[in-house]
Image (tube, rainbow, N blue to C red; front, side, top):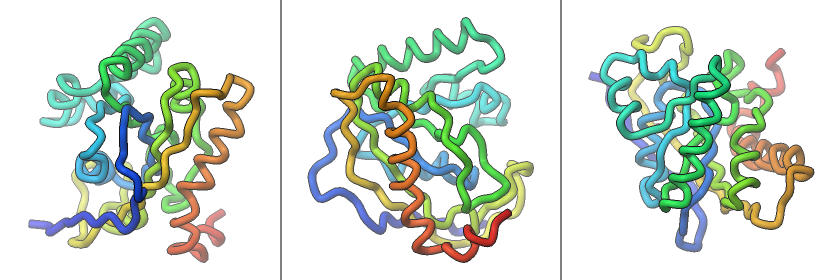
Length: 199
């Protein structure tokens, strides 16, 4: 048995009041189950790729309690976004990994996709950024779902929420880049040399 623990190293001083668009870097399959620990005070649904439905066990759980996005079917993809918007109105936060995948360069992040930020702006929902500092060290191989995992502590940083209610589509890129920098800051502090040496 692999002993895994979670520790939140830093979080906002003010009480979190959702709903939020919760975004985080994605460097390990551990990020998904540990998100339920990290963001437990803001009940959320994952908005994630439909491929997760193929995971044994996890697939049924994901389909029942989250929102799959069928990226190869435009109509179904739009329906997923509309469902997310409705769930925000119902008081749920929506959790998204804006990289869209686990990059092979982890802990170095890849460019964020626009979807999370477009959803935040269109619904006026604040963004809650989260950094997973070292989950990539514990379970690293994005090609091997059931690969070897090391015992250890998954550390996270919960950042201050970022308001979006007065933003428009013209602000999307600057919002995306701001969130990237916020999430990346703890990674640079902890793993700067590794990130800088990545090609």
